[in-house]
Structure formats: structure tokens, C-alpha cells
Length: 359
Ligand code: PEP
Ligand code: MN
Image 1 (tube, rainbow, N blue to C red):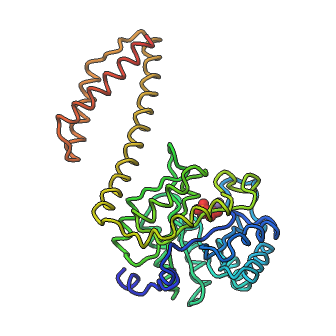
Image 2 (image 1 turned 135 degrees about the vertical axis):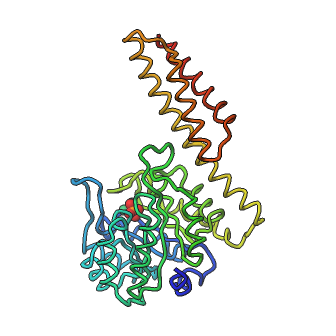
Image 3 (image 1 turned 90 degrees about the vertical axis):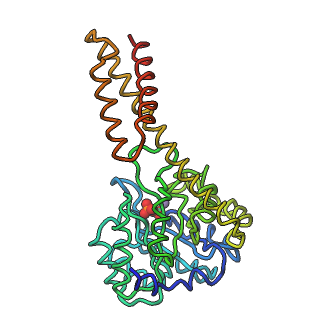
């Protein structure tokens, strides 16, 4: 890990001392859509124009990308605007085509990072490429070793311009995000590989437009991300994929004007640390509330069954065993008996109230 950390080439991201901004549509749709969007970023804070050419869709029957034509359009964007261009690759053929069309940045998508075979194939097809930057999105599920393993596979094939993209993690039940940020994972990775560039992708974390800028600021200010990948489209509502989360380029540029000096404003180290811990607490609190609502729903179902079977709401033996179990679990996690008792008395009281109403 030390070798990887020491040898990573960070020059591409450090050279302009500003957050590194990648933006562009989720998918390439037409030459006009690409140029209309990219032209907005001419001479702006955006360094890289992105567009997906091969789209990994969860289910068949959706738009799966325009293929090679999109690479022609990306190449034209590069020539017309001077922006660097980026796209997602998922196999050796994609890599070969991207090299032919002089694509500057390749990223491995969240679904591909989950497969060591796919990552290995991509790493081998890029062997000793010292020109391109390769970014690895986190795997769909929060498996840190798999994410770092992908990084190691590329590094072992002589690729040094590397970075990670934090796009959030699938969560079976999520209240406010499409993909949960699990910010603590970023803190862990920063500790393990401090020099690895990390770019936050608030578009795929949020899944809608409401909180993209809030998540962007958190990622740079409190979790030390080096840049952002934000999906934008000249006509976001009519985009062929991820239309809910794409934003108008002008809207993005407005936001960037306000935050571009965020890296210079170091703030108070301890205040920043307090704020980042508070963000972690807020995320956990939201999970606690979501679990409470699941518990309440199950309690209601039990109430209905008890009514049908004419069973009393309060079952002292069951209540005794719930409390004993919980105290034991708490004890193993270093939580005091008194605290568990207080919490579970409240939970139980609420369940009884809910079931009594049903009765
Ligand atoms: C994308 O960037 O459009 C994409 C498909 O992202 P992810 O791999 O993070 O789902
Ligand atoms: Mn997308």
C-alpha cells in the first residue's frame, strides 16, 4: 500500500489548486446535445467534459448508449473546446476504441468495479499507459477492499495517474439519497492512502437535483475530496438517462463561481473536524429513524394478528426476553444497561400504544 501511495501521480489534479471539475451528460445522445452542453464550459472552471457512451443499465430495455459514434462526438468536443474528455469503459474493446479516439480520462463504473475479472481485463488492456487518467468508481456495495483492490490491479499494470470516484453506495432502504454517501468510508481511505485523489459524484449520490450542491460542499470542505463529477445536460428534463439528477450547465457554473476558492479557505482545523463528525452523526440519526419506522410497521402487523387471534397486547414473557437480549447485545458493544433499558422501555411503550389502538 505504501508503494502505491508514494508512487501515485497527483500532478494532474494538484496543478491548478482548485477543485477538479468534471461535468457533462449522463449519456451522449447526439452531436448537437454534446456540443451545446460542452460549449457552455468553454473557458470555465470545468476541466473535463464527461459523457457515457456505453451505459450499464440495471434492467434490459432501457437506452444502452450510442456506442462508437459518441466517441467521435467526444473527440470533436475536445478539439472544439480544449476541454479534456472522459467516458466509462467496461471491457478491453471499449479501452481500445477510447485510445483510438484520444479520450483523456477513462472511468470504471460502479457495477464494473464489483467484478475483479472486468477490472483485471481493463487494467491489462491499459498496461503501462502513462498518458490517460483512470478513475475508479466505488463498487455498488460498500466493500472497501474491492474498491482498493481495483486500484491495486491498475497500479500493478503500470498505471500511475489514478483516482477514485465516490458515487455513494446502494442502500436497500434510503430516505434521502439514491446512493448513500457513507462518508466514514472516505475518512478511512484517506487515512490508508492519503495521496489518492478522490472525486465526489454528488449526482449519483443524490439521484435528484435538490441536494447536489449541499453534498458537493460537504465532500470538499469536510471530507477533503479533490474534485467533483456533476452530470449536466443542455435540456436536463428530456435527458435519455438519469434525467432527474442532471442540471443545466449555467446552473452549475453559477454554483462553481461561488465555491471555487473553497480549497483556499482552510477554516479552523478543529471546527472542520467537529463539522465532519456532526455530518456522520446526522447520517446515523437518519438511519435510526428509518429503522424505527420499520419497527413501528412490523408492530402494527403484529397488532392486527393479535386482534384476529384474540391475544393480549402485552405478553410479559416476550417483553422480558426482548429486554434481556437487547441488554446483552448492548453490553457486547460497550453500551450501558441503563441506556438500553431506557430506550427499550420507550420502544415497547410505543408498540403497546400502537397495538392498543388497533385493538
Ligand atoms: C454514470 O456515471 O453515468 C454511471 C452510470 O454511474 P455509476 O457507475 O456510478 O452508476
Ligand atoms: Mn448517470
